[in-house]
Image (tube, rainbow, N blue to C red):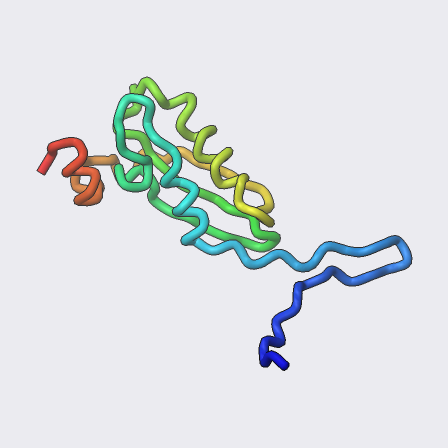
Length: 124
């Protein structure tokens, strides 16, 4: 006999049918992982490593708010990057509403980039 007592998690049953099992809490790491799949079309580095993500807030109902910036206000990708970030975060199972807000303060500069991003762009 095995000591493995792990069993699949099932939802509760009600007269209307089975309710889904409770969703796992959304983690900041999961949000970061999804944001790392979003690349500026002109730069071969993801938006997280570029230092464009300023804040991630996970609230009630697994609602996620992301504050991000762009490299410049005239960034050619200004229209598409926030939507791409929002779509990526929405792919996390159990996530509620997703809001991506563009902020300009403090202004982005190269010091916000990770070392990996600097190496990828030969900016060390």
